[in-house]
Image (cartoon, rainbow, N blue to C red; front, side, top):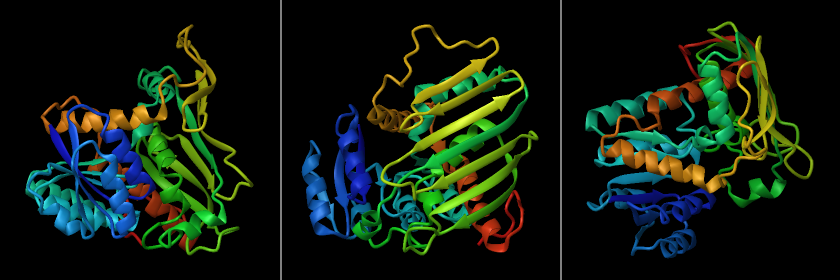
Length: 342
């Protein structure tokens, strides 16, 4: 039995609790939020009596907790991760891990010092179409890959930013790339390999916020392939597209759907899709989070074969996002690894 404490009882934290309470081997025994109403509501969702704390540091003092699940605004992740690790707890953190690679390094050092594990939620890696794509790429079935790209054409209404004061701020939100599109950055670096350089342009077109709401950037991979990401949360009325496209000398594929859960195009030499393969991922979106939580448990009990994103893997996405913002700021191509961040 792994006992969880959840920090942040907003939309994401509440979702996590609803997933966690259905998984054998997990108990949510503590919740924390600075808004009493959210905290109290969350404490009533769990299947076991849960303590409630307005100050997350009081939650960390609970001796019954094994792991802290951090679902707070991104800008708070780093310090909360470090405090939890120093309190002797394992940590699971929502994406992105934080906003700067210097923060990731501090988190990783703290985890090592305390002999504790840090995990990051990247549930889209468990999507059936993504697993098929990754398997074909790993087997070299696409031939020489020359382009990987992502379109994140989403909608966020003005009310979205009015609901929570931290949204759209540089220090806590980090921008549309960090908050809305970071899963796609993770996918591209996971399937495309190490990134050599980034060149970006970003703008704020629609929303009255501190950060960008639209951007486009080009990546040069160490393999020689090019990557392109076009992201925005300004699409009229509702989400239009969230997709990843891979082009190689022996194949092409496009994964789309609402959450990268649909194969929209597949033409790969020597790698046909299963005849009974459904057009959409047959497993519900919530099951991907369940996969993440189950893999976390495996890792904690010592299963080295568990598939879960750790701090060093999550660092790659944070580095690309930081490089994008730096490139857009100074108008130049940024080489990776990043030597001096923002």
